[in-house]
Image 1 (tube, protein in one colour):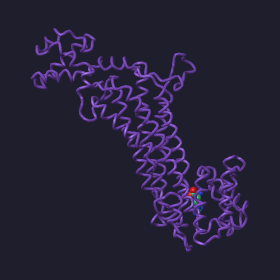
Image 2: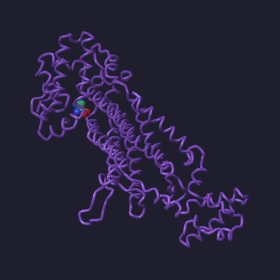
Image 3: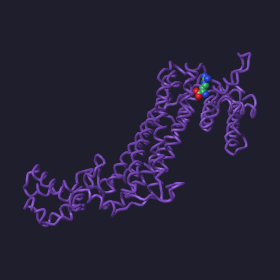
Image 4: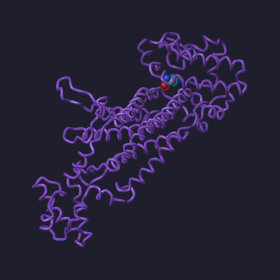
Length: 462
Ligand code: ARG
């Protein structure tokens, strides 16, 4: 048990207390960010004349050697230290001697951990955006290839009107696009540097906070040192955005599960993305989609947990805030994994286009268009609605799509019908005529906008 604060204590910490209090078990996750922050701090201390250039160089070399040795496995992160900050400082002092003891000048673990967490979350925001860009690319490819793949659009999970697979997937493109944009806006709001806030009230050393902020890629230092050490809003915002990503992934998973069911057969998942049953030889289960849907719960849990942790904390730093880490890390890893798996599952899946089109026809999704046909020939819409309603009933009794009903039967209900009704209610016509912005007949416009977004997101340096 090695701590940074033994001086005023006369007894060893109780073992249970030590275990309960330690964070090295999980804060080693931001080891690299901790090194990065310390390097910037030390550069600034030397620039301000608080450390000599020799001391600076000794510390920088020491920090680099620690970084390297942890990465190549020759320096294991020992759990005998209270937290990652104590570990780095102890090893540094071991390696570079007296200079190492000066690293923490003008700094507290409170602003140090606030910085590490911010750097970590910022990196994770960038990585999540990249993964979302990959998923958006996959969705875009499916859209492009399926502009003429007709399928039923649903309301109340009842077949409603014909759409295309391109249009259906386009709705998910929009959801994940908003997610990516949301991340960008969180990033710009959180990009302020807490380093230099000290324990809570700044420090008496002449620190150049703008300089460390710049070295670490922040827009500026946090404006208030008490807020600097105790703000975790950006973690909550990030978790909120991850919860929304998971909600979207979960909805898509639910669709995939339905489409993959024996009854629908709209989609066949690839063998590499499905699993079997230990007892029923015929089974091929959509476990990955189900797990994505299920894991949404733990991401919501992390968000709720942190909201609850933060709601009663008086200014400035309190140890409760150590609880901002484990569930957050889990939520980030979970969401990133799910985004990756969703992209892989979609890329490898096979859509059954004929089955989708048959389903759209069999579900009378063209009934609205049949009514519109009459309206165009001068029949009032309300009359047209009821004429088509009776015709649908007739088709249901015969168990045929409207497309297969002989013209004589149409004419029995209303003699305005002619041979051209079949063309008017074909899935192709139903989709083609819906040309308002955002409708399935206007896919060219929508695809162009998606492409433009994708081109921008890959060149967007945040
Ligand atoms: N492990 C602590 C955390 O995660 C680091 C800050 C410790 N600060 C302190 N005053 N004990 O919040």
